[in-house]
Amino acid sequence: MQSQRRAAAPRHVGIIMDGNGRWATRRGLARAQGHEAGMHAVRRTAEAAANAGVQTLTLFAFSSANWKRPAGEVSNLMRLFRVYLRADLQRLKQSGVRLSIIGRRDRLGEDLTLQIDQAEAATAQGRALHLRVAIDYSARDCIARAAAAAQATPERMGALIARAAGPEGEGLEEVDLLIRTGGEKRLSDFLLWEAAYAELWFTDRMWPDFGAEDLNAALAEFSARNRTFGMVPDEPRPAAAVA
Image: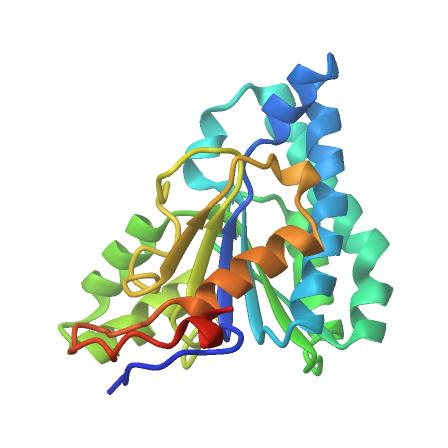
């Protein structure tokens, strides 16, 4: 049973990486260039999360609904995923980062699926950070597939949902902090079950501009919040402690 606590750093952070296309459009660039800039933000944020003591970082890269986007943009995103896996595999291994891809794989294509399998196997021993990237992911789809699997307690249901998202999911910590960039304030079918008690933090910063300072600001606000999980809140902490 969860107990109320204040945490210096959340164990599991989820981020809805929003704003790549708008970032590019505002600069007179092609949307593809915004997605490329977003790859650099992934690298910065993963490094900052590991340095801050975050154990698991789950990034929403491509939702199941994103297949509705123009074919050219979808094709470019799939290309960027392949580029990221090739370019960053050694860096992830050297940094002790374990990479997992969650979501469906049957629509990604054989080449990308093979790269994912190889990257996951190569980084399986990483302990500095568990980096989970959601591709062709839908929380509703995971919940529906878990519900079809068996009748279960809420705890067992959570394990089934995690397993439906990816083979490494069972036993994963629930989300402590959920961040969304780009100014929008909605969950967009991301980790709906796992984020039931997550602290929410929204920023107008577009994802390509997001970096360590932004993540640290979110972590600082998280550490100041009183998480009750439905119980009676603690007495207000002294002002000096908040600062």
